[in-house]
Length: 149
Image 1 (cartoon, helix red, strand yellow):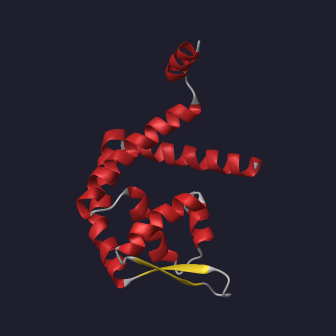
Image 2 (cartoon, helix red, strand yellow):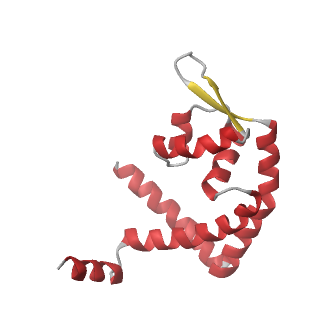
């Protein structure tokens, strides 16, 4: 009975399954490019976010990137170990702060052409019109679902 239910779920129009499939395929293109500079997509997004808005509290960074605190911690560790990010004291002494280092800024610059290549490839494969429509639809869905929370 479980196998039958699973088989029908795989063939269904389940929104979770469809969005996961698309996200996975898109991420594969970004990961394939960014691995050339030793990064994964999530790590590059994290570096770029801290570069743009840091220093930032880890809890705020997790929220901005839609990551759980444990996922953020797991992704921060190799970036701190590589010397691209630093964890320091926060503004009130009870919190921590994440900031980018000079080496992290260089890593962002190194990754940018690869990010751009992945972006161009995804746009080419999906079609610019579909990408624009998808961005608009995702924005609408995010607003609708966020308002319901």
